[in-house]
Image (cartoon, rainbow, N blue to C red; front, top):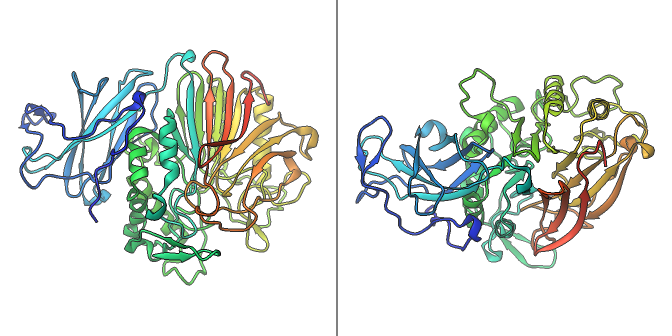
Length: 530
């Protein structure tokens, strides 16, 4: 399928993205080769029709991603200006079939708090004279001064429940709305794809309207092979809104269950007749590989330091903000009724919990956002008896996975770690929960907020019940009254976090597609609990 080159709609001035036909210098030198290549050859040029994206941007670094249509060398140029005067060149990898023709280049030594314009050129590995048309993007590096402030968006749950790219409504419209808000970055809170979700050509809605989907062969069945997982990630990139957004807004991405299979956990053996591969660990390995190929995630790419590939990480976004990206999938124990009185594995695993404690204690950022792919106090069932998230509906003292969260909350209080805020998606509605010890069965923790927002392009669902163990109060909720409302029947949701550089105040806004701010909360800096 041939894709149009992204970037057809105007961008705000601060992030204006170059487009149109640009000619690179005829003296473009490929690092170390000594060969000069003209920008455009007459035929046989590599193409990058899936757009570009940047990820895990800090004050001095970032990753840039691209996908080619054939083997190619990736070359990235960066500049402070759209004209690319005094451009700096970053020689990227040789892209081939082993990574599904995707490639990621690390950019280092970038100036802090600056708009970075970049262009990616694909070069024929056998003939440096054959180069593709540059694909253009931009991002802003994190500030190194507190007074500059930070603003980002978050959401999750994309192409779920059979609601795919619908050309009749303009595709994934929320991405265009988010792009126009021009955030510093986007936190994608998981369920970036629905590898277990089939996309049919059309669906008849309860009122008789027809929902039409763009379809692909890989979305005609549940994903099992590596190529089928790759095809699920490619599916979202068919949407022009997603490609335009990616070219303008860098992302911090995590995963949840649907990147592999609904409600999965390590060691699970499936009894689902749709799957010929029953070992979830095999499926998860394939999904993780495809995830790392299709998203620029710093800890999933070659590190050169011997450390394992992993999803959990800290993205440091200047003096105001550290984002603690959690992985509540890879290390969890089996889903169960959750009533065990001793549970050292929990939902994070012992090693990840120890890592999180160390990183939180070491953080000097004013705000510590805990990017969780599942909520804390919302009861998320898995079948009739088991539970998928942390809460299990017992309002008493912590049991099961709650024990690990209690340990973490106790640690935050006793170490007097200030400015913690929990953000998540997963449940397909938007809400704000305040947790306080005076309402809780477990009381050895400081008050905190948890904000939920999503889906971004999936079905809407009614609100989940609350578990009283940690004393949640649902301060705000907006959710459908019946399950799996299509994006034509219920708005999509995303959240906004705005940290003021002067006061240090953090404002959370829960937004609905269409521009409405549903709920707003201002939090004060320097406090253990709010």
